[in-house]
Every structure is written in structure tokens, then in C-alpha cells.
Image 1 (cartoon, protein in one colour):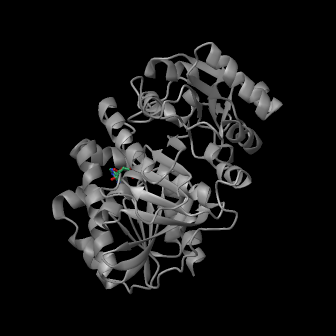
Image 2 (cartoon, rainbow, N blue to C red; image 1 turned 120 degrees about the vertical axis):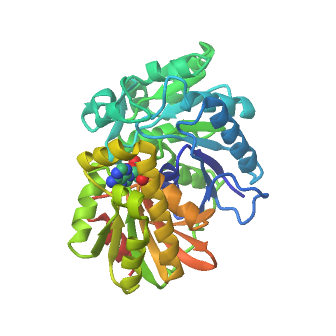
Length: 419
Ligand code: ADP
């Protein structure tokens, strides 16, 4: 029976959460969207990946409610709403409205909000979110194209998104331990506070918080506050003691890196990998003129076993130039469609190990490979696991990396792990 049902508001966020839960050795399934049929072959932890971060509120609420309904059918009685560790949202939502809708469905009077991920430099102090040493509003998130974060105070960010009062359990309370934190929750509840922001600056804080919240039927946060849950469930006997996760054998076959992320870290990763692998650069302007045939021919000319990368990854200046000519959406779509097409071609020609960089890119590639359920394997970098699935009858290994995750040698490290 599933012990925790999780809903993530984007794709790579779902793999991030699934990877941290799988560190415990428990079985974890990641579903791409809410499955159509009833639950089958369920895992200890079920994670549904949605793509609702920036959807209109009503759509995000409807989709998460449908995901919750499916997760309830797995037998799960506890649920987790996962969003970004930088609290990516607008004044309308969708973090708060979805949480309130899930609370209503579950009859929950109170829930917590803890996007902290200390291992990746996200911490919360006195209700303010930091990225490394910078307040959120001074980090590069202030310029995000869809969800610019111009305030670092989580109470101020959440309040306009919800109908009921927001409160804070600060670091001083968390530091006093589980009972003090639970007392704080009870006091806030007496004052009518339904939404509690909880400070956390270290993994130890996250363990205290997870312990204090283990009986709540809904928790919300980044992935990291869910990480202590498997161990806590084991102590309580709701999760079996032994490792239940599958030992995955890496499928034999060629390997390919596909990169559509243009983040600073991905640019460094692409440059590092090009020192040891053959590379083909996709240019949106060329794709618009001549289509994807040149890239297809390049791919077909390479032996399946040779290390290779196809990338659209470019610096802000080239991205801007392509966007000026084609428009932001068309430039992005040309690249995503090309990478999706090349992923199919590679699979049909014997590639069985795929490394994909970029959140949107990952969505396009998994869709093209017709993948709906991923079984989670070993972690390559914090929040980025290998996953195993089938595509058109072939066993494949796939890793989906969001823009800024992983270190410079991520691509080579990922593939070395399988050999
Ligand atoms: P990240 O996880 O870094 O945000 P995404 O894949 O989510 O990466 O987003 C990157 C977007 O940029 C995708 O839509 C991709 O198609 C687009 N893109 C990639 N390369 C280029 C380029 N050279 N010019 C314009 N857009 C690009």
C-alpha cells in the first residue's frame, strides 16, 4: 500500500522529490500526469508530475484534485504538495490555491509550507527565503520570465494566494524541537491560522519539521522536507523496514545527451562534455529555415556506442537573437520539437540511455518517447536520479535534469554511473 501520495507542480520537480524519497531504499514511482486507469503496480511512494505551476488557477486546482483522487485510490492517507524551492508562483497562485483545495478535500485544518532545500542552498529564516546568501528577491529569480520573485517574505507571498490566515513557526521554535513546534502549530490553530510557514536552515531542521508534521494528512513544500519521511514512517511501522526499491540493471545500448536548457550551469555542463564527446549544435534559426534533417543525418552517421550530445544550449545573447527573429514561443518550440524528434530517432536506432537537460525539454522528450511511468533509481546529483522505464517496448534509462542542478561534469558522471 502507498504510504505517501505526492503531487508535483512540474516535471523536474517531481523527479527531484522522487529521487530524494528513493534515497531511503523504498520503492518510488513517478507518473507523468494522472494515470487514466485505476492504480496498478503501486510503490511505497507515488509521485504524480503535473505541469501546473503557471496554469490558470482553476485549471491547476482541477488537475491537482484529480491527482489527489487517484492517489487516494492507492490507499495513501498522507499527501504532499511539492513546489519549487524558490516558491515560484504569482500573486494569484498556484501554491496557495492548490493547497487550500487539497486541504478542503482532505478536511485538513492546517498545513505547513517549507520550500527549504539546504543541500542546494535554499533556506528560510524568519519567514524569508534565501538562495545561497542572497534573499530570494535579490537572486536571479527576480528576473524569471514567468514567475519573477520580487519579495523574499513567504508570509507576504502566500497571503494574497489564500483565503485563510498565514502564520510563522520560526527557527527559534524549530530549534527547540518537535514538541515545541507542535505546540506552536496548536497555538496558531487556536488563532485561526491555517497556513504555517516553517523556517529551516539545515537538514536537522527538516527532520524536526517532518517529525512534527508526520501525522498531518497534508504537507506542502520543496522536496527536501519530505526526505526524512521514509525513516520516520519506518520507525512508526507504516513503511516496511527493508529496501523495497527495485535494483535496476542499466539497459544495454547507446547513450545520448539532449540539452535544451540554457541555464548557466547547463552551459558549463555542455562545454565540459564537449571536451570528450561529439556534439551537434541545434540553432533555432536554422531549424526554422531547414528543419531537423541535418541533425538527423548527423545522429545516424555516429556509431550508437560513441558518446555524443545534441544541444540547443546557448548564451543569453544568441538566445535573445533567435527570440527576436522568431518570437520566444516559436524559438522554444522549434528546439523542443527537434529534440523530441531526435530522441525518437535515437531510440529507434538503439539508444537506450538518455540524459536530458531542461524542465520543458524533459517534458517534450518524455512525451515523444511515450513514457508515462518512471521507476526511480540511484541519484546522480542532489535531486537528479536515474529513472527506468519502457519506450515502444524497449527498456530505457532516462535522467531528467532541471536547468541549474548538477555539477560541471554531470553528463559524464551520469553515464559513468551506468557502466
Ligand atoms: P531550464 O530547466 O533550464 O529552464 P527548459 O528546457 O525548461 O530549461 O527551458 C529552456 C527553453 O529554452 C526551452 O523551451 C528550449 O526549447 C528553449 N531554448 C533552448 N535553446 C534555445 C535557443 N538557442 N534559443 C532560443 N530558445 C532556446
